[in-house]
Length: 408
Image (cartoon, rainbow, N blue to C red):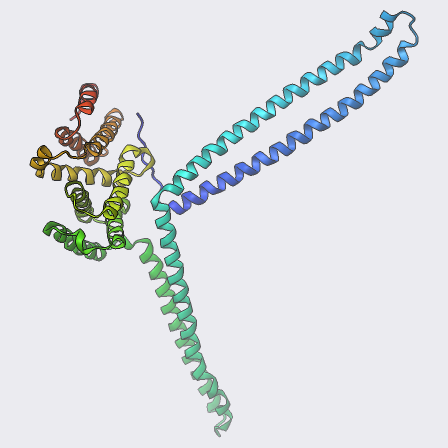
């Protein structure tokens, strides 16, 4: 099993690159078909002309012979040429059709990659973010134009008053002073606007690097975590509010790379508590269960298909399921009495075992120490709650991994 975490950090650039590759490949297939078909039919056309002249020559030569065998021998070259032409035409058609099939297979793989990319929630989030950026940028640009107009309008009525002044030598000086003041005002406006725009773009680009923002995020997440700890958290939320809340917290826990470790940790804890709330509370609304179920599948897919996601995204999903193991241990009495959902535990443990084997086989336990440690924690913690079939199936495999790759 091979694991490779994606190093690309811009989903928009990845989407545009993929779209460009697909367009290039489609154009290449079309141009190749046109070129080879044109060449093929030209070859057939000129071959038929040559064949016609050979037949004509053979027919003229056949009149000089009397026997049927001698006359038929005159047509030998034209018949041989016809066989060679047919063979070459069939061979050429086979070769260029095989080439087109190779191009079409590449195009199909690119389309599959595009479908996977379109199914990624990060791309949609980036597109929405860019839309918001464009809207805000346009508003700022419009405000800048309005401010410039406001500063220029009061200055225009003052120009006709200049000839009324009797002192002509002072007029150039006053006009020069006005021009200097106008240029200073306009320069200040432009500088402020340019500074505002550049700061705005830099803020968007490095928004999550700021420690102040991380502190604000952390304060908000602490409030959410305290509300979850008090219980009855879902009662006060509508379906859309819950969806928005989980989406934001999952982004902090999984998809945002530049947030602090404290924000990552408490976000993972909150998501695990939400999963546990649905897991252990049978009285929650069906709509809430369905929403949480969608995010649960999303997190599982990241662990199960780790080679399609970035390292920090896989680490975030693994951290959520590691925190979820604590909820399982805290409610072990309820699990013994009631029939709990074994399917989720089995799925997560199997995916974690695949990830653990990949990390071990590639000696990634040093490069990705936390991911390796948390994955091993899931395997060990979920052993008390998994089904017997899964435990019996994977116990030998887990021992082989330890023996073969030397964990720890």
